[in-house]
Length: 210
Ligand code: ITT
Image (cartoon, rainbow, N blue to C red; front, side, top):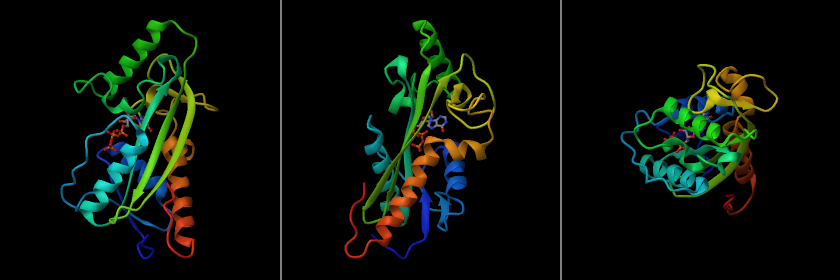
């Protein structure tokens, strides 16, 4: 694994994620850039395995731009819905829905069950790939509850209906700095940084650490 590069390019088409990557990784000593200026990057069709999806996004970007790329595949898993929307979170309910529509679909499915169990978690697999295709993968999760109705304007996606454990507010009501200390993405990216520096500091041939 190359050790002379201190540049990571954040490979995502989701503006909310991009801002979070940049904030979480700020101060890591690694220069963080987004895909702007690297030309068009095409990503493979996503499957239903977060880990594979994250690796494929990072690999596709790294090989096309010739720099280290980081990506994530993430989603929300609602216990009473057998873990749905899960890896399909971004596409839940089909192409016609926006974030608000997907949130409403999730709420109406949960309400239809008439269950008291509103537990859920956000999960995130983060992947780094070098242009040569070496990868580092990490995982993070954030547990909480689904609120009865959306609240707050911050964040993106399902944040307005997710109340993280230990907070009385939705993820869209707490400020982004706070979200970025407790979120699934923050946990995965801190673990990725640790794994990356572990791999960098290991003498001899660099192991795959995913
Ligand atoms: P990229 O693949 O381009 O990164 P995407 O939004 O399609 O963007 P995913 O396939 O990983 O990314 O889908 C993640 C979805 O899960 C995201 O669109 C949200 O609906 C939801 N999600 C993930 N993290 C979230 C967060 O921190 N807050 C709210 N919703 C989140």
